[in-house]
Structures are given as C-alpha cells and as structure tokens.
Image 1: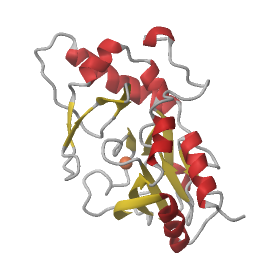
Image 2 (image 1 turned 120 degrees about the vertical axis):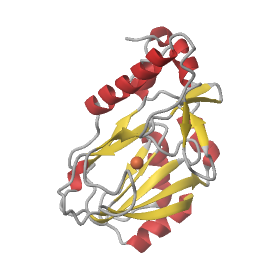
Image 3 (image 1 turned 180 degrees about the horizontal axis):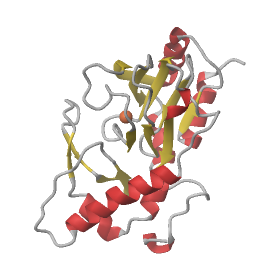
Length: 241
Ligand SMILES: [Fe+2]
C-alpha cells in the first residue's frame, strides 16, 4: 500500500490525526510531510538525556504543547525500543464540553510561559474565530489569586483534563507507534502522552511541528466545527453534562 500525501492530509483534517498504516523510511516520511506542511523545530527525542520533561522514561501525563504556535505535531518513530504501545492521544472535545462560559473566562486569564521565541507566553484558553482553543500545559499556570472563583475554576480544569484524557485514550494496535511508523496529531483536538517506559529503553522519536500549507481548509474544520463528532457532543448550553 502506498501512502498518498493528499489523502493523508484529508484524513488528518477529518479525524484530527493520521497514523501511518505501515512503516516507511525516514526519507519517505520527510517527503510526504513536505507536500502538506512546513516542518520546524525538529528534534530526535532520546530518553535519558537533557530535556527536563522528555528525557526520562517515566509516564508523561496527557498534554498539549503547540496549538498556540503550530498547527500540529508530527512524530516519526526511529526506534520503538520494544515499547510501541506506550504512546496515546486523547480528544479535547469532552474537556471543552465540560466547561461553561465562566470557566472559559477564568482560563483566558491563566498564563502559561512557553520559553519559545515564536510564542513566549500564552493562556490556557484563547479565542479564535469565536471559538475557545484550549491548551493543557505540562506544568502549572499563573493567575491572579484575588479574582473570586479563579483558582477553583483552574484547578477544576486540570482535574477534568486528567480524568477525561485518561478515560478517553485512543490506543490499541492501530495506534501503537512501531519503528518506522509515524503519526500526525492536531494539537487543538487531541492531547497526547505516554506510559512509563523500561528504564534502559532505546526508544527514539523524531518530532517536528507543522505549519500546514492548506491552512485555511484545516482551520475551517478544526476551529469552525469544534467540538467534533457525535461521540463527544457539547452539552446543551455548554454546561456540565
Ligand atoms: Fe508532548
């Protein structure tokens, strides 16, 4: 089976992610991706060195990381280290469905430091085309403690994300990232994480962020039609179900 770049893009836009159906060479991965996106900040993530969050084989809670400065993330599995099932993604739509207007107003004032040139700071919720875009960062956020209800709303948000991203993980044989396979994830529609890996794992993941060439088409789906799918309907009136 050959992977077609335009079909790959169509699936990514429709489903919010695309998982390769078979292993490909790294060159093929780069060629396919360059047809649909500009890639930036590429890195080979080898565990056990340097990076404060990624460099250890411990569990990584579900999180988003780039929806404020990129359109999505691409991972190519250079070596699965024998633990291909540890990676997972989890939809953000059920989280959005649990938030009301008041929650969103508080989250809009929850500040996140990103240490990235392109976007040094952002907020947990921000508005785009009249829709809330949510970021669930690795670490804590900062906010004005004096505003009534703010701490409670932010703590509730962190709790709800942990609970729902744990309950709604997409995984299994189709999602397992084996050596030579790759996955593209819309960071606005899915959080991602991984279970703990063996301490001496040889796993290497290549990661890059994407700017889609056909950005307008993607935005129509990823922003205008949020949240997605009858599986995770937004509660009536936007309140808790
Ligand atoms: Fe991440």
